[in-house]
Image (tube, rainbow, N blue to C red; front, side, top):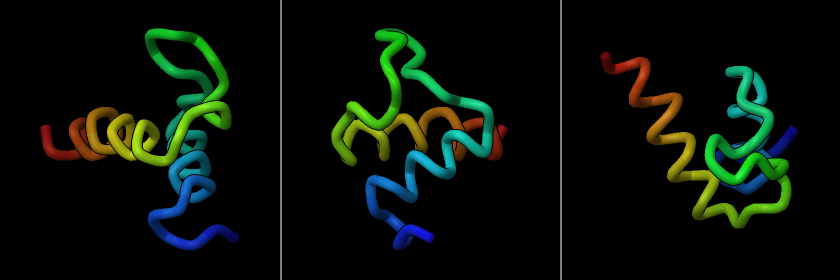
Amino acid sequence: MAYQGSKGWYVQQLKNKGINRHPIDRRKLESYKASTLRKLYVDLVIGKEQK
């Protein structure tokens, strides 16, 4: 269990939505900083829910 807003939480949430790698670089999510993961989460997960 990761704290909400931590790097591990963002990785967990993205993986739950089926995103296992970065959409452009194709590297594993764990190799990115929390700020990059947050941007991916906002763009890909929250953005799709609002549409």
